[in-house]
Image (cartoon, rainbow, N blue to C red; front, side, top):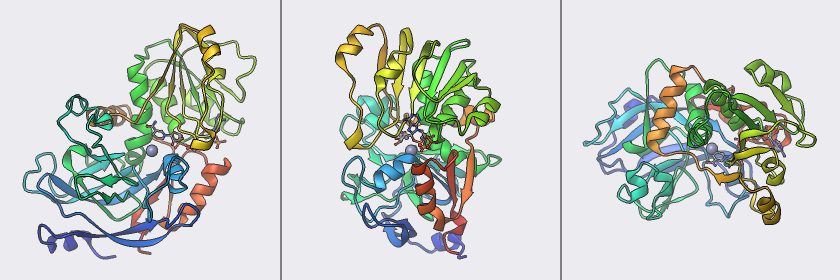
Length: 364
Ligand code: NDP
Ligand code: ZN
């Protein structure tokens, strides 16, 4: 394989950066090899050679236009870990050779209240640029391309620092699955002895379980079958339920990571007074659940909120916390030509937790 560090030595500043990866050309197509270019490196940008990219269920929703019409060709991937191969003249956080991670965002205005509070995902000027399937308002509205590729150019603010001894294949999924579950647990202030339930026990769900256990909670899982009961109990989960019917326990917090149609009231009904339902799962638009207002009012005293990834400061905090406590995702490493198979397994229930693409297999 060509040494990417040599390639970057020879790219003059201001020149577009050649990249290649795997893309889908339409919502129904399979992944194909795809060559493209990325915007030139700006003075606050870094270029990362991507070594591992996780497959999030959001990638499937996006590639198949399940939320809204996608921008094609689409290179998904927002769980990115790799090595810094070039830095702009005003970069201060990284040097060439460092490890870095990128999640769901690559830029934002940096000036509004949300950005100043490091809640960049809620940029009040609508300038949060998502890692792929987004028009980059800072670069002539060109489409962004994600992590199923050999490199990425990103503003250093949107890259997290990864220590040299960290397992990069495990770090990648933390950049979305990790932060998306860590953030609501912190937001809800989970503490020792709280009863926390996690609905949907996949890539995000297993991270929610691990963080909740680390925070001292008593943890339960709601799944659609008992296939992963052993894994749940081995992690320290008290009980796995395969239905919401006839449940006696009541919970302080339920996190729903469910990516399919379901009735949120079934979970709201299981909250203690003052309990909270945090929704992170984003089912396809056509089957997006509604909440029955009458039932909600008669179940008053419970809170329901949505949660979207987490800001950059919290993402670095999550990464440091995960590495310190050795909280890692459950991963299976695959080759770049196995993405279609992984998608199939993730939608048919055959997958266990997180697939991570070894990007060194891209050119094989
Ligand atoms: P996965 O496919 O890895 O996991 C989903 C899990 O939910 C699977 O274990 C699946 O079961 C289970 N499941 C499906 N339907 C039900 C049901 N009706 N009841 C209980 N469990 C069910 O997906 P991810 O964890 O990667 O993502 C989950 C969702 O979160 C997606 O919608 C994704 O788009 C969204 N997301 C949201 C983010 C945010 O910021 N809010 C960020 C990242 C993701 P089985 O094992 O049988 O397949
Ligand atoms: Zn994701």
